[in-house]
Image 1 (cartoon, rainbow, N blue to C red):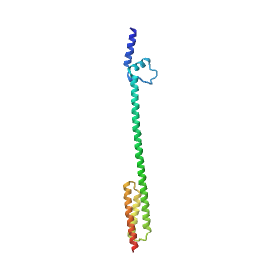
Image 2 (tube, one colour):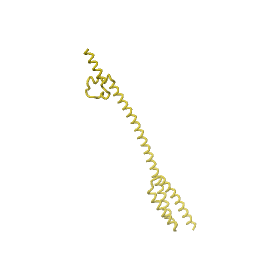
Image 3 (cartoon, one colour):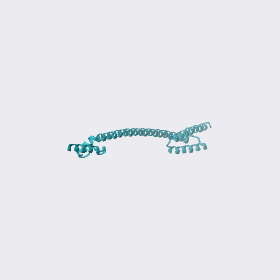
Image 4 (spheres, rainbow, N blue to C red):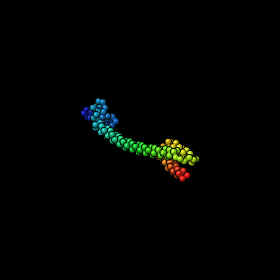
Length: 160
């Protein structure tokens, strides 16, 4: 009879252990706790829970890596676009300086020439403050128009 009481108490102890009580890394758990966790499946539940956490962490890590790669691609594209815009702006400013020098060195000596020089100088100031693609495009158009006007002034002066 005494054997049955001990066996019954062990079985009841096993039922009383929850999965949270079954720590795989616990320091010196008692024999009854180990037996209880083994028979109740507490250890298995703890292992399953930790495996789920590892899988979730791996999924989160993959998502984070993809986000990082996407961010790096966008950053690279933005840097390339900025470099392209800077190249266009530098070319437009160089073209503007050449047109201004040409006008200043030409033989045209009249009021139109002075107005054109002022307009080109204002355009040069604007180009130094330009940062967006649309501003650079507008300046390029203004430079092209100014070049046409300068050519027309030189032609008119040559005819005189």
